[in-house]
Amino acid sequence: MHIDSLRDARSRRSFLRALALGGAVVLVPGLATACKKDGDGPTGPGQGADIDIDFARGDVALLQFAYAFEQLNADYYLHIVPFLDDGAYTDDEQRLLTDVKYHHVMHREYLKAALGADADFELEFDYGPLDFSNRAAFLASGRNLELLGVGLYNGLAQYFTASANLMTAAKIASVKARHASALGVMIDPAAGAFAPRPYEDVHRPGTAEAALQAYVHEDIRINNSPATFAPGPNGNG
Amino acid sequence: MRFQAPTNPDVIAALNLALRLKRLEVSLYTQATGAAGFVAAGDLAAINVIRAHEVEHAAALNAAILARAGTVDPEPTFDFTAGGAIPGFAFTAGNYATFLGIAQGIEDLGGRALKGQLGRLMSDKGALSLAMAMLTVEAEHAARIRRLRGQKAWVTQGSRDTLPAFFEPVYAGEELALQGSVNVSTLPLAALNGGADAATEAFDEPLATADATVIVDAFVA
Image (tube, rainbow over all chains, first blue to last red):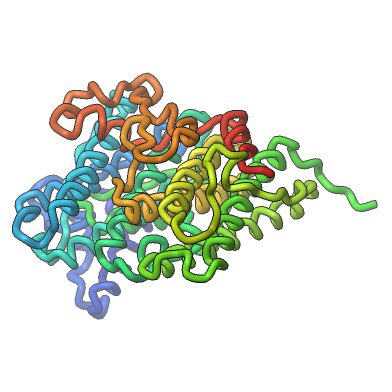
């Protein structure tokens, strides 16, 4: 066991995971859930190697956070490819989902190129029991990922030092919102699913990290998270 | 006299431009939904949702300007023929398709114009968060209207699709493939993933203050 696995944050996370699983904490086998690293430990979210995103690095950290998220998005849509022409989607919907897949690859590859040597991690993903062949399930969690991305970028916006980086984040967030709208219409064309609220969320880095972590094998760690946060109109961080 | 920190005039100007766009949208959707039978029955729920959001956004921007001791610009009167550039348009039978086109152009404009103001809001994090929360909903609206018109939800290259020539400046510059120093359309995986079309669709470009203002002001009577 690595000594840093005893850090407070790690222990708290294990505790919260145990609670989330609905079990009594005493049933968790000691600190075994924190004893991991690289291959021979338990699988599942957060069980792989540490990925450190250090906000003390400024814009680089924000772009790394985005890069981690875009890896997830691009990976998610690769899973739909085998099922696209199974009859669950019209030709128009197949084109739409293919476009969304392309856009996410573009976002990931752009960030990888922009980060250069700082794009030094490749994540593995865990979707739990999600059935990618199920239209409703795929669209619902796909839409959630788009909205999560919107909230992530909306929340990171305030921490950029370079206006060009802020603009890139806004450009990508805007396209994710278009995705969320289009997926919402596929889920429920009659209702307001295309834009469920007057404002999209503005997430704190920690909120976005926790949501991302649920899908990621590696343990994403936000270091030096900013002390200040300007919430959005939804007020939910 | 109570001390009040001076608000950066750029922040007030940015919020006023955003408000001008929101008032334009509120006027468009209020007139459309106020004309009995004008909006297609199947689209009415979506148009009502969008209208309600725009009303909310306008009120929030108004409040944000006042909270910063700024002066709210006077409310203009709008002309949706844009001074005759969209000839004969009125909220009457036979003009619904034109209305949806105007709505698409104005929603796509709104998103670009708001992004064009972000640089001026960097000094005011509360206003920046408001703008981000708002511009992403604007993109949701734009995508919905585009889908109602049978268009892709995103903007390909700099295409105005089937919109009148008046809207050309709304889409000029959307064809940008260069993001910072990275040409997205020539990245190693780009060719296998939609090429230049997808590279431009994947990024919604901003519109500079002067360019956005010219288009909005074309609708002011």
